[in-house]
Length: 162
Picture 1 (cartoon, rainbow, N blue to C red):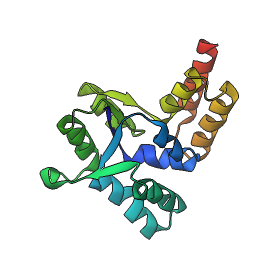
Picture 2: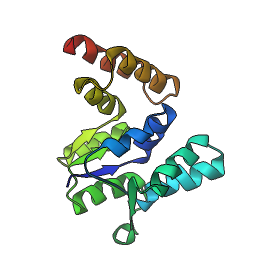
Picture 3: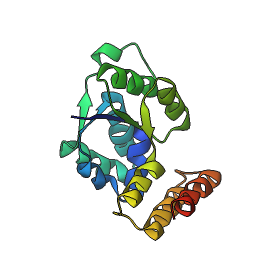
């Protein structure tokens, strides 16, 4: 069974654009360090972010499993915990939207996927149309989850594919 480690940034992005439930369609086990849960659910609820409740449901439904941080107690930064968990569990993928963590995971040899790439996979499988893909990208940009230059970069994938 494939193991996928997911980060706070990806969960927030998928929640913001209303597609977090698509994680149920992934063949494999999605896991994260407890710190990710704390960041996007507990801290999010305290801060009043509505998507924290949506993300919490994904955990409550056991779509994502929190992994104990006992072996990562000395590590303050959740990003480092994500990479260490991926190593510890021999993850097949790391799902992340944070640019620095994306690069770090790539350097560690992981297959890394961000929200636009996750959406584009659905286009390649003919689950999403090109127009739907672009609309989701624009929503990521609207919610400040994607820069203008990355919006254009990922929109160009449609032109290359077509």
